[in-house]
Length: 154
Image 1 (cartoon, rainbow, N blue to C red):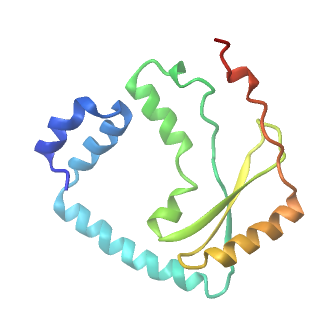
Image 2: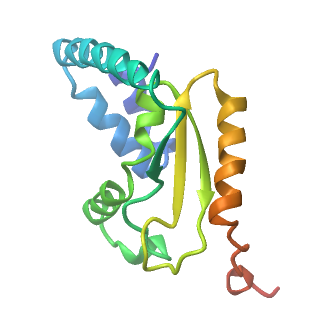
Image 3: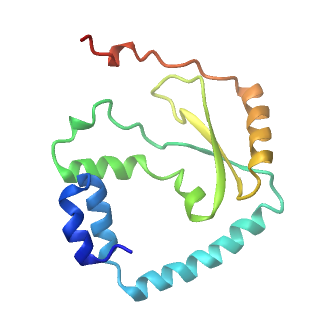
């Protein structure tokens, strides 16, 4: 368990953006945490009941693209704003105990989504992979990106 005192001791050794997210969690009261857990249980029931009528959900992987170079954001607040724009569509898999796969799409960088995800209940991984293969046969597979500009000559 990571309590406030242990966190403060470890904070200098943590990645600053990770430390910032952990610090925000330490400000949540016990009552608020328990209320969120009760709400999550209600939503879990609703989500899993929905899958009685569907094999999988399809959703975008990202709503916004992150910057090419992370140092384009000179302050912690600017980085936090960028992160909040990029998070989102993949969180339901974690919150609702789902398995997921992501399929890159052959679209230009400016168009969204650049990938789609398929989500299914935990334990349905084999079925989800079969659905992912079937979807890939329809939408095609994206070519590998040219990463040569990232290489540094030594």
